[in-house]
Image (tube, rainbow, N blue to C red):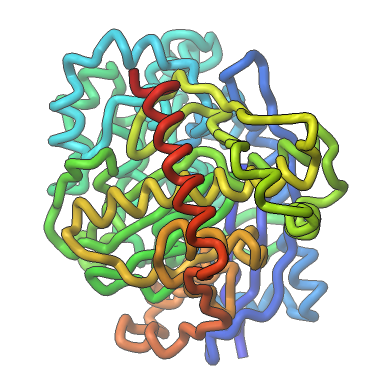
Length: 495
């Protein structure tokens, strides 16, 4: 019996998970957080050495926890925060802090080049926005001395986090990525799933600094020179975190839809093997590429979800642990005390469907009766309403009603949040038995790349744990709150 090692490198921490490579059952996981770096308002960075340190810690710990020998690892799958951008030398040494997907430093650059918006949407399915990697690479090339010097000496490599981890795991030998990550850079053309010369020219990026784009399920390289794993373990699957979650939810069929509740919330709808552009503020992205053929998805992105709960925890000290918000919000004496309170969780601007990166967060409608319970309840409502905006856009683009949606991520254990989501969205919310679907999707990707799993077998692996439907006693309240939400969105951000 062997095990697949899934490395889920997220915005606030890294999870190492083990999946049995025969039964494909989830065995164990270990997570370690790492520091967030905020040099100035609107700027978010990660120290790549901090990230690599969490990889070095979590893998031995999960092996020990599950009593598994490193020699029993049959393959490795990687999933990652996507647009976060890395610059490193050919010996694997970071040249700068990674610029995180939430970072807004390129906002003025994007505004100045809005006349190129149609070109970017047609080629990449994305708006020209600070969110995406190409603008971050351009900033590093023009503002970081280490990067400039490395470029002049032919010693500069760029990549998203998957590329950096692959490079380190393979002993600095494999510089590669795959289309679900590359499609988030503003540098890859959707139909060819290859780097586009016109886009590279716009950002003045040399293609030789970029990783090779491979299929999502293949041998990317093998482990080499690591202190915590033996040489020769193949890395056989890589997917960006949201595409990995869709895959882990058995979302490889056209029409499949999922929403992940993490630091942010991200909704993906599988649209099959033909590119479809959104008319309602959504993104077109690659779900995966298999045997040279791409599968595409529409995506809605809320930049802040679980991070809003973390803000209440860390900045306002409402509770010691994020999981406590459910009990605190449920302790509200009467919904009448919360009916006028809006929590607008736009700490990193508005993503889909509005794309207002300059937007700010706000809590509105407070009174002398407002306390922690009311604000916590409003926070969960704000997350649900943000996601409902995505679902409305999905319905309008697809022309389908979307009667149910699969959900995953750490926050979906919050039953109050799930009930609010079902009621605001008038949609059945389905929680799977394995909510770590991002890591699980990476393991499935590795299994396919390893040749021990095929697509026909994936559906039988997915299991439902709970279903949430619209609650009649909440419907009037939620309809009123939705109207208030729409009114303030229009007044504060869209005019």
